[in-house]
Amino acid sequence: MAETTVGDIMHKGVIACKPDTPLQEVVRIVADTDVHAIVVVDSQGEVRGIISHFDLIKCYGTDLQNRKAQDIMTPEVVDIAPTVPVSEAVQLMVEHDIHRLLVTEMTPTGKRPVGVLSTTDVVKDMRGARWVWYMG
Image (tube, rainbow, N blue to C red; front, side, top):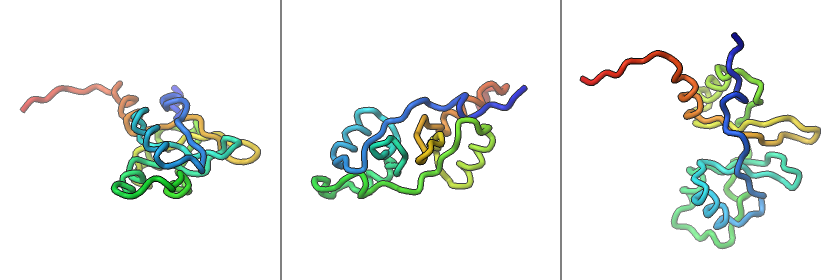
């Protein structure tokens, strides 16, 4: 039996914004959609960075009025292809101490986001294992 791939269990699609999106708008999008990260893409839809909840809360109490997504995004995105086995994705998450991976596909000009793999997705995939309730 073939090993489960990232593409088999990932959330398909991403919530994205442009680098020049006002930070107040980024906050609204993240709050309204209840996502834990928003992908920053250029006009061709190629990945330029990511903004996590943690990136946003670092701005708590500051003036968001004149700031843009590009001002706080993390440009080094840890990503993975949808064809990679989940076991390799888990190793990458542990190695980088992160809770989600951006899933991307290569294009002639860069990487295009196609989904997100979270630790929750991995745990849900694991639930096929036998387990017993213990109430001590």
